[in-house]
Length: 195
Image 1 (tube, rainbow, N blue to C red):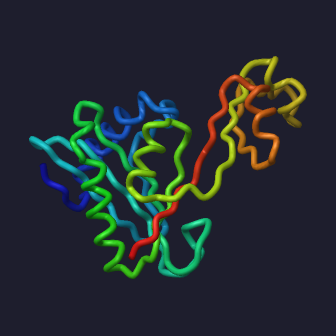
Image 2: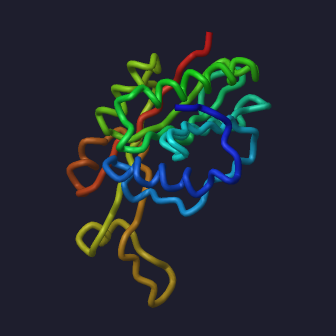
């Protein structure tokens, strides 16, 4: 397996790897049709096996403090994507991508990495084993159908009726929100200091 820089010709394989990687996670419906482009510089890596992209890592990083990351001081990098094709999991690919990303981040002068993920326990366990510290969380709330939307979401445009909505809940009544709506995910922030 080779870990190398992403190149534009990798886009189809990158998208395919990301979609397949997310299907059995809480991000199953977060489908991209093309690779994201970043406003700031980024460390973009792929893991390749037999000509196929089997892992991806994107870290957008700061040239000016506070422009990418949501917390901490100094220059940080945000992990937007780290994923491994489901047929290639449990081979250490994510860890190898992260290690290479950290090496590059240190050369770029970054002092930490930040990542946000949902409540898949195996994903959270991986971050913790990779020496990330859990720092914060909020809720991703999906509202669907009249029962969940009524009294919570409405439109001020005549004849426009919401049928589903996605919202962030940053309050302290997390358990009440989890009980009120069918699909709620805790979105957790992890941070890793780069020594």
